Every structure is written in structure tokens, then in C-alpha cells.
Length: 507
Image 1 (tube, rainbow, N blue to C red):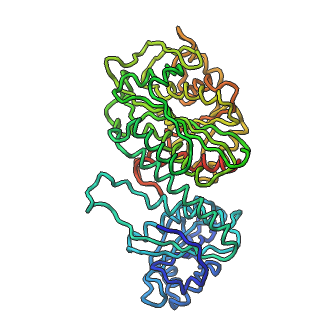
Image 2 (cartoon, one colour):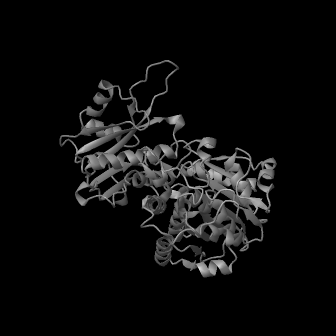
Image 3 (cartoon, one colour):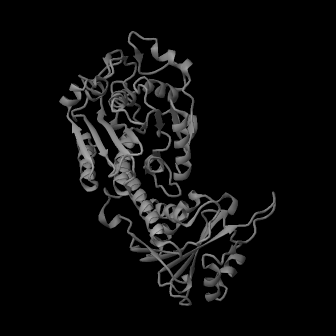
């Protein structure tokens, strides 16, 4: 679909669907919801007048309250050029946020599919809504439309695939068109990149090997004029990344270490390193996982997928920030030559690690990647990983966990998460738990004795960041969904793309 900034009266606009919104009226506790009112600002009143009061009559008859996510499709019977009017509830105005608009965008996408619409028109009033100006609202809505239109059907028969015929979305507004176009471009780039990350995470590991991941990173580099280099197993060994290689040992698929680099045209205002965990399939290794749900472990490279997708957006938005992305990628498989519980390996920074379980593999490959990235002296270093199954029990399915050694960096990420619709919850780096990692024949064990495994994992990673300002995002709670969400179908969610893009561009 293509997005276009347009001007004109929405009631006269030639589109298959006109989308108008309404807010839910405030009620006292225990009071019955009141029917919603149409707004003059987005053309709702004018469209209703053309339809001879048809919309307001429907609102009254069906007691449509305008609750968030609720919608009504109304046939216009030729009274206006559009075939349908889509009425969307935004909930109460005091609770309005950018997530409201992303979800509204998803509603529009799904409705367009249902009526086989080729074009949709949506009005954006020029006045601020809450704290949000028109450009910010346009970006969130465009993201929502793209995210809500996603489906992964590459492995289905052609005739069974869902088809959207939607070609054009007109964003009807008045004001600073170049500024709106810039916001549209950012929303489109971010939404498409998130869907790209979803594709990577949903692809079976048979077709998404470390080498395929490296090839796709190179393709993104070519398109975005990024510098991309890929270390082979021999080069990884030369870098003394034995923690990483110990996990790769049991698979016939060769490991790779991917480095993607973006340099701004002007002097960089900051230098950021992002590291994505790239376990393209995680069987647990010798400490093998239970069979139930193991097929989902193709998504254990969701951090790597998000990082590659972020670099796609950065190449398009061109912020004045230098960004280096590092991805250690391999499979974790059992085999006769696989690493075993009780083995001791030496990480790149010289620390020895006793492997208690081979299913704590993510922190092993990230240890060497963090050590490598920190040597390049970035201002900020952020790793993104489906690190611990315990994360969902700590923060639930709506939050990712964030931990780190710099509170200002964490606060920036929390703010970016709120703006991007990817909230994070801070967990403490509790130093008392570290003794569970150090009671070993080696410098460290790869699991701790505390039950707080998400914190244990971050404490382990902290041993490899040196003096760099660092934050760890555990997205094990948000990278996959087993049920359809407002703008994410079952499967890989593309978690981490939007928060990192927002963070980097905010610098």
C-alpha cells in the first residue's frame, strides 16, 4: 500500500472507505456508557450530514459508545463518493495515546481487507489531540496500518493466502505538508521493518540458518549503503570467542559473526552499539528442552532479526548517530561433539565459564559479542535477546525487561518504549545474586543460584561490558505471541525494532 498526504473535504473524497473517529464520553462509576458523538474536526459531522444523519442514528440505535478498538462499517448507498464509512472508537480522550492510533490503524487495515477496498481516506485534524501534534499522530497511525496488515503465509498454497487489494491510503490534513511527509516516511519505514523482523522470526530454521541470516544482512547493507562484514568460524576463533563457539559446536551449520555499520554524513552526535542474539534454532543442546513448544525456538533469533531491521530503518532515516550492529549467529544442537554440562570454556575477555546447562546458551554467545563491541568504545551499548523463559513470569506478556549499569540510559529506553508502544519494565541488577554465578571451579557459572533468572542472566552479561554504558533488553516475554493481538497476529511480533529506532533517532 502507498500512503499519500492529501487535502480536501472528506465527505467529497473519492475513496472506497472513509474512516472517521469518535471518543467515548466520560461516565461516573456504575453509570451506563453514553452514545458517542461525532467530531467536526475530522469531518464526521459533515459526512453524517451527507448521509442524512445515518451515522448518528446508528450510534443511537446501537448505543455505540466509541470504546477503543470498536468499529462500525456503514454502507453509504451512493450519498457520498465513498462506498463505506468506517466509524472507529478511540476510547476516552483523557486516555488517548499513540497506541490508540496504532490500534486504529490496524482496524482500518483489517476493514479494508473485508470490503476489498483499493483506497482509504483518513482525516487528521490540524489541532493537537492531547499532547500529540499531527506529525506524531500520522507516524503512529501509519505504523499501525502496516503492522495490522501483516500475515505470514509464505508456506501456504497460493489460493489459501489472504489477499489485500488496498493500494492507496490518503491522509487528509492541512498544514505543513513536508513535515507530514517526513512523519509518514518514518512510520512507513518503521512499520515495514518490524514486519521484516517478523518474517525472519517466523521462518523455519531449516530456511533461516546463520548463513542465510548473514546473506540477508548483506542484502540490507547493499540496499541501505551500510558497511557489512561477516566473520567465518576461523575468524571468530582468531578473535578468541570461545564462549560463542562452544555453543555452535554441536550443529553442522557454521556460525557467523555479523557486523553492520552506519556512519552519518555529518559528525556523529553519539555512537551506539546494538547487539542481537542470533540463535537460529535452540534445542537446548545436551540439556535438551522438552518437546512441547520446541518448534517455537526458531524465534530464538528474534533479537538478531530486530537488530537487522533496525539497521534497515536507520539507513533510511539517516540520523546523526553512528550505529554499529553486532550479531553472533549459530544453532544450539546436541551432538557427539557438542559442549557438555560441566565443561569450562574461556570467553574473549579472558574469563572462564563453567557450563552448568547448555540451555543457557544466549548469554554465552552474547558474552563474546559484548566484549567485542565494548572494545570499540561506543557511548551506549544495548543488547536485545530472548534470553530467559523466566522473563514472562517477572514482567508478563506486555513488557520487556530492561536492566543495565547506567540509569540515564535505562530512563531513555523507558521513554522510547512508551513512545514506540513497546513498554519496558526495569528489574534490579541485584549484586547479592552474583555470588550464585561465582561459586564455581571457573570465574563464572553460566547460571546462578537465585530464582531470579532474568536478573541472573543480566548479571552474567555485565561481566563482559567493561566500563561501557550498557542496557540489556530481555524480549523473551514479548517476541512471540500465541494469540492475535490488536496489531500482531500469532507468531513473531518483531519486538525491539520500534523502541531501538525511537531511542537512536531521539539522540
